Each structure stands twice: as C-alpha cells, then as structure tokens.
Image 1 (cartoon, rainbow, N blue to C red):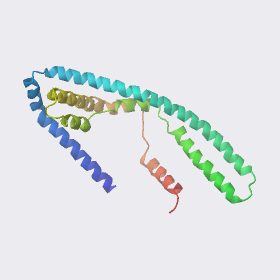
Image 2 (cartoon, helix red, strand yellow):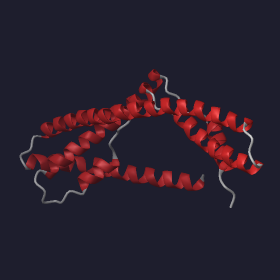
Image 3 (tube, one colour):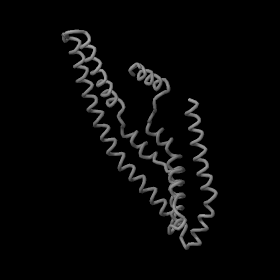
Length: 208
C-alpha cells in the first residue's frame, strides 16, 4: 500500500508540474503565435475539431471491442454449461485411481474458472460508453507537444492545438464523466469483493 501511495503521489506531482508549466507558458505561446502571424482562435478551433475527431475515433474502436467481448461472454456461458456437465460425468465415471480423477477435475476446474470469467466479466454497452467517454488527454499530450524541436514550422500553433485538446478533454469529458457514470448506473466492485477475489487467486496459486 505504501509503494502504491508513493507512486500515486509521484505521478500526481509530475502531472501537476506539467500543467503548471502549461499555465506558465500559455501567455508566451499566444504571443509567439501572434508574432508568427498565426490566428490564435483558428488554432483553438482546430483543437476543438481534433478533440471531436479523437472522441469519434475512440468510439469507433470501442464499439467492435464491446461486440467482441459480448460474443466472448456468450461463448463463455456456453462453455460453463459444457464444463459443468463434464465435471458431473467425472464424478460418475470410474477411474483406475483417485489421482487420475483429481488431475481431470483440476484441469476442468481451471477451464471452468476461465469460462466463468468471460461469462461474468463482459463489457456491456453502458460500460463501453463510459470507456469511450473517458479518453482524456493530459500530461502525455502536453509533453509530446513540448518535445517538438524549436525550428519546427508553426510550433506555437501546434502547441496551442495540443493545449486546447488537453483542456477540452480534461475539463469537458473529465467533469461530465461522473455524471455519465451515474446516469448509466455503472457500478464498480466493492473492496470486499476485490479482497475475496485476491484471496481466491492466492489460494489457487501453486505452492513453492
């Protein structure tokens, strides 16, 4: 827990530093864009169009993902029923020794766990909508814009576009994401459920 907290603190400080640098440089960027004869509002408008395009592209990737996971969920449910039938047959079947029965039961038990995961942990359309809307751009986008060489043509305008994308997604999508989650009724697992899943995984892990 301490290591996780330290990494989160470090990540928060680094991201805060990036946005502090953004706020510190925004005035100089606007002035540089004006000095280069660029239209600042045109750059902002292009940033807004890029933001809309990024959202559409993310939705275009999420839709096939949801369809694929739903197919996997249906196949998983079918496999669960098949494996449960096989487990019942193992109990009724006569083996030469009990060890063979345990090996067969363990093998089918692992397949049953995998099939149950796909059957119960599928991504629905509500979760897909949240996933599509949660594509905020932040520190990475700003850092990529900052890494442009100083002699790149229209560098101030490109940086303004990147800043616009980051601000619109963080403020627009970031502020409305909790509302969207609440409206769709998407709920995450509780800490007790997570602890039980971890304990179950540790119990299934081989002893060394």
